Length: 438
Image (cartoon, rainbow, N blue to C red):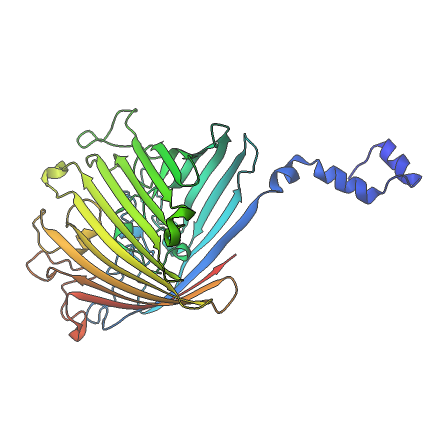
């Protein structure tokens, strides 16, 4: 490092030290200054999943039956993006898995009125496949961008904040990160929601009780920078965008034991990039404290409805909805239990990609019903580690083996005694999930 002659002269007579001069010079380095408030965090997510009673497609190894999205794997069955990956869905059952590695680089907003920052979430590993493929090609890369946005604050009222770039959707009880969900596996509702958007989102905290947000994005699909497409022409007006909004209520101290409980509602409306009609998602959720210490209750409702798509001459039932209830019990400082019960109903060809795996018949208007129950035991044995065991049961309430439309590649595939003597309408999973957070 070079110093001017005055600094060297002062150092020669002992007036200053070269060490302090070095520190002063480094503090004026614009790169070091910009990085000084940047944080790096993330996690490594691993699992082992055993499908009880399954002979894996009657003795023939299959890589396509894994329930889409429920254990974090997307790809061919990625319902989060209408641009599908050509990579076969990875078989996560009956073995050990690296699910995903996440790396977050972030400069949070500080207390300044005109604060600025950024956030980048990078995904590595199998669960990144198909997460946000490009517009014109299906992605098979095990690298994905979960979020990447510039964060800004303007001194309007209590402070108006903005995100511009790629950000998570504003609706949903559960998210992609298994570490932040009450259970390891995902809910049916998660599988029919949008996932991320490229656009602009504004958030305003009205008071300690009420927060609101609203935004505009290119499409409802996950593909970064993609544009919406019309049903017939494959192109759409440059002004056609996706709109979203949400409201969050946190109950105040005056509500007694309910203080700190949250209520949430949101809506997303817009076109994808797959020649479907305009789609609307509605969401409502709540997490409630109870008079019993350590016990919480939760609930969620998801609805997906779209204009009927007749592209290719095939009419579709474009409606799907799910409901779920949650129970959390913090038994000790380290031990907790989380339970989830859920129900889903939707047409086999409703365009979400999820219910097609439970197709009952070739009839495009056929609706399928699913029932699920999940129990998770979480014990904090090591610092920074989430270690939990989970049992999951899924049941198709209408026989998926009836008629010629039974899916040969779905989790309830019509391929003989797939589940042995456990019944052809049921799936049972036992999973171990270990996550290190840094």
